[in-house]
Image (cartoon, rainbow, N blue to C red; front, side, top):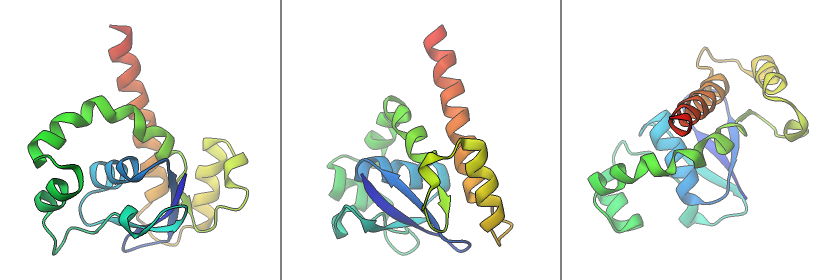
Length: 141
C-alpha cells in the first residue's frame, strides 16, 4: 500500500491506495484536477498524482498510461470497484488508530479534526457508498 497526502486547499488528508492507478482514479475522478496527491510512504516520486492546473491532463494520461484521455475515460467503469476501498481510508490529519474504526467513527473523527467547511472525508465516504450502491444494483440486474 502507498500512503498519500491529498494536495488540496483545505485540511490535510491522508489516504492509502494499493497502487498509482487507484490513487490517480480516486483523486482525479472523485475530487477533480485541482487536487493531487504526494507520496508519504511506500511509493516513489513516480507515484505522485499531480495537480492539473498548469499541466495537461491529456498529455499526462498519454505519457503515464499509454492511451488517449478518451480511451482512459472509457476504461473507468470497469475500474469503479477499485475506488471504494481507497475512499474508505481518507483521514483528516494523522492516521494513528484510524484503521481500527468503523466508517461512522472515522467520519466523526474527521469532523473533530476538520477546520474547513470543505468536508473531504465525508465526501470520500459518501462517494464510496454511492459507488457500492450503484455496483450492487448493476450486479443484481
